[in-house]
Length: 137
Image (cartoon, rainbow, N blue to C red; front, top):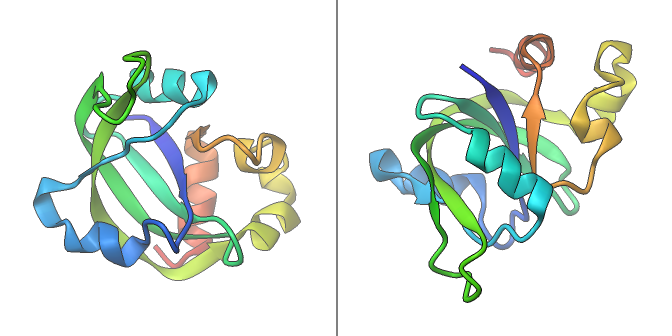
C-alpha cells in the first residue's frame, strides 16, 4: 500500500462534505498539474491518503482511501487529465497542522514541507506513521 496527501480548500470541498459522500466516495477531479496527475496515476485501489485543508486551516483533518483508480476527468475539456475516487475512512482525532509538521525534524523532507503547493503528494511510510501518531491514531 502507498500513502498520499490530498489538498483541498475547506470552503470548496471540506472533510465534512467528503464524509457525507459515504461508501460511494467522491471523484478527486480538477487537478491540472502534471506532477499531481502523475501521482494519481500511480495510485492503486486501497491506497490511503491524508485529507488536508488548505487556506486558513492548513491541517490534516482525515484519512481517505482510493476506491477507484485513475480514469478520465470529465471536468477536463482537453481530455489530458484524470481523477481517482476516494472515500472517507477516519477522522484525524487531533488535526495535524502544517506548523506541527514543519516543527518536527523527522518530517523535514516531507513533500508537504518541500513542495507545499503540490495538490496531490506522496507520503513516505515513516512520515505516515509519524503523522498518524501526532494526530492520535
